[in-house]
Image 1 (spheres, chains in turn cyan, brown):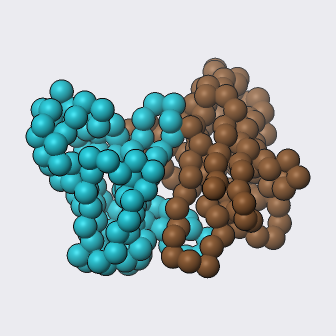
Image 2 (cartoon, rainbow over the protein chains, first blue to last red; image 1 turned 90 degrees about the vertical axis):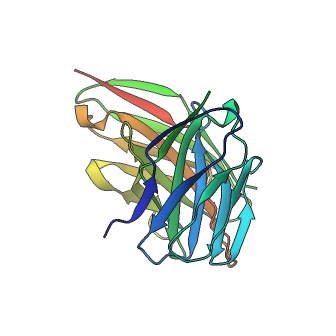
Length: 112
Length: 116
């Protein structure tokens, strides 16, 4: 039982490149979300999904797209990478009515 | 709208001393409150949570927190710090909702250093 798996763990991009951060869960949770973590700012919500086919924006959605075709997968796409998107990205699932979140190990992205 | 304030971005304690990490929240409805711990180069792990009922909640690794509604606080404590407690700690709030949104709002984090 892997929980929440993120790939890749590390990535370096050039400004303007696009890429997809993968997130897969085997917990059968409906709710999934993407956060970015920056020093001194905690975790900020980028996008979230309440189930397959349903996504919505969080606090900092600009420059990112998501889709949710299956319960298990929730990829995050960077359309045209910018240095401001250098960050650590976490995918999470949430279970139950008490909203307990389970996190992946993170993807450390550097945009040069 | 919900928000979380963690007082002190860095806290240092000696091994064996009391650990106190402060968290205050604002929420327009009864909240669910969480403390997460993040070890270097890892994801976040749930330490403890308050949902309903007893206001003093116990978590893993000897940590506990008390929900004080009148003070809108949820401070994290541990009677005796251990070197392995060195990590970053995040307080988070989620509003009780009958809808499908399950958004967590995080504080900015507190880096705990344990001195030998």
